[in-house]
Length: 503
Image (cartoon, rainbow, N blue to C red):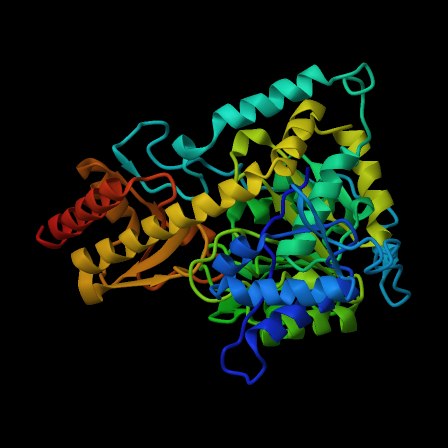
């Protein structure tokens, strides 16, 4: 049985159109655009009403109208689904674009050694402290391990010799089908299972894309700041990494030409690859505005370039309405969408995925088959069952509420301890905050002193490529800390700053 995920719906109370009509029209538009397809489950009236904060009667009336017009069908004991004749099910994925420069992907580049050293681990090694503000980790103790264990057992019970043999490089079709349903419903991406390749985490997807599209010395545009590992991935594949600044609206598209001129040794070559994190920019945390998304898509179309959309932290948003993925706005096959289950479930699962334009599917699979053959099958089957049973949607909903509470606790603790001397960014989404302290003390000194007091905090300077932060700047993860740990850790950090100030 397929249980529905949340549905990406935006309600505007400032317009004259009734809430029922707005909901009705958006579902019809999603069906006609292929984001919702025949057989797709949609949320119950109670679940959707709670999600978009309207009266349940609003949703009931919209559903009744959609059912009357043949868009929806109710199945007793199973739920509400897009009707079998609501829209054609054979919509084609985005096709080959004759204006794109495919010459760059004709040959897979050799891995090029670079002179930089391997990325270093976190400071203080593996020493544990009571309050570790490490980012990018979920709340381990809240994962429904008993339910996951049952899914694994069921996957093992159903295993056949074919299942336990070498599977297809693209991954389990059943899982790719569930992911397609998921991104169509929650991210407005009209994806098909055939466009999706299962990878061993998002990092493998990025590595293969780098091998595929980054030639020797080819320029690659990245956000500045961005993750240092991401920069290394492109560098190891021989790419010339070019930083483009980020402001409160996301990557500064208007600065791309200047960045190329300043940082590229081939300023006459237009980069064919640009990497962005539009849902929750890492590490600043801003959400790319709609206008900036349109500007970026237009830039890519005019220059024949691909955009890698790393949909980092898109599942957790605490303020404002969710926005469509960049790939959901793409009509010309420019966007490569990368996602994973590391933050929503747990990193050790090592299951990610990439949604590819039609032109890149075959060469991407060729590299994956050579380098990795396949992502472990039993875990894919267990994850399929976990999603189909409704446990995934339930878990995301529960964790969203928990993380929102912890985020609010962190913001309040920072205000209580530092007052006007702290600024924070990216608090509307994700699993971390970027904070800036109004002090002349070096961030590394503050981190070391905080460690002595019992709090582990992380300076953000390593993620800035071209310019260093002007103030002491830190990334504080809060998802795996209790509210007591958060308050205690921020107090310890404040004591560390006071100790250094009074030296």
